[in-house]
Length: 224
Image 1 (cartoon, one colour):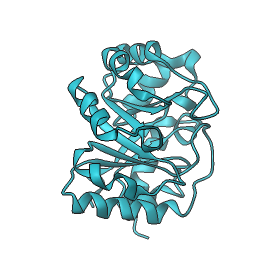
Image 2 (cartoon, rainbow, N blue to C red):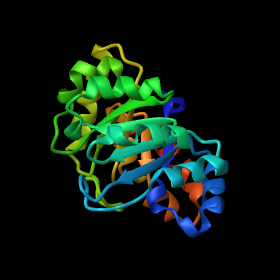
Image 3 (tube, rainbow, N blue to C red):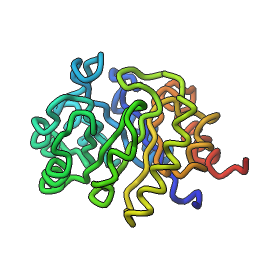
């Protein structure tokens, strides 16, 4: 895997919303590839975050693709409004999507790319039958709900299994990792097969977010 395949997706969860325009400009000019937007309902995960209005605001402020991660029950209730607000990718949890194949198709019908995500305790193999239908497969490397958590080391083996599964399905889906991504953990994830990385506190908590994006990208290419 070449360094050219690395995508960095700073997470809005860690941004200063009072300086949103400035913060988005900094990461966009700094080379971010996507903007990751965590939508939490306080039911599926123990937190409340952003709705369609915030997505709409981000869409007006940046040209970056909006990578919207739905950590909600009954995610299909949000597809229409979030697609209209400007989401580029809608990613839903396997744990709350009993009709996942149909839901992925519905997302695509709305003009968005379709992704699926698994929590640390959910086998990635649960997505095997829809691997060929995915535009993005997201591996949670922390238990979702809060930013700034530590990376779960066993996620590396899971990323490797996910890469093998996508290869078997001849899928071109992005393989994304979210949770505890830092300069110290990103290289191992990249080596395991991930190509897209969500970084919240690591980027927006840095003194120079643009420099941190460059450092994270460079860390992928470093030899072990």
